[in-house]
Image (cartoon, rainbow, N blue to C red):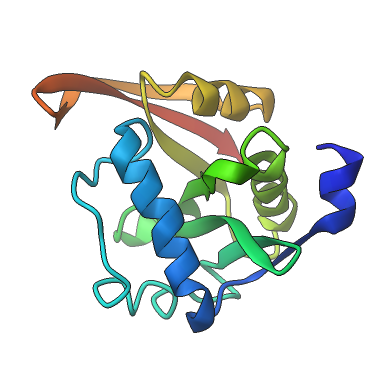
Length: 170
């Protein structure tokens, strides 16, 4: 992470007032067809409970704020509902267009890694499309390993897309 980002970025829990910015970042990602299986834009109203469905002490929803603007966000969500998976979480991270390539996604993921123990996390996974090379590289740089490969499981605009499961024990 660059020193500039480190000085000016604040990672904090998301709040309801952040939702328009969070949705805008997400919808920009929807349009790229690279980082989410969501194919249609979402509305703030549709995502009203998105933040409330996360608990800061177990499954947080964080934003990275730069100069008063939400630049990126990360969610820590349950991997699967069965009790045996209680310590395993799925990480999702999205960065606004004008804030990319500044180390913000890395900083958010490092925050999740650093706080994993206190959140009761034993393993973390990222579900990443095989054609999303920047995300795959980032997770690899943070010592995530390829734990799974699901060929052609997503259909995006008539194209089959692979899903790579990147994982790391906490």
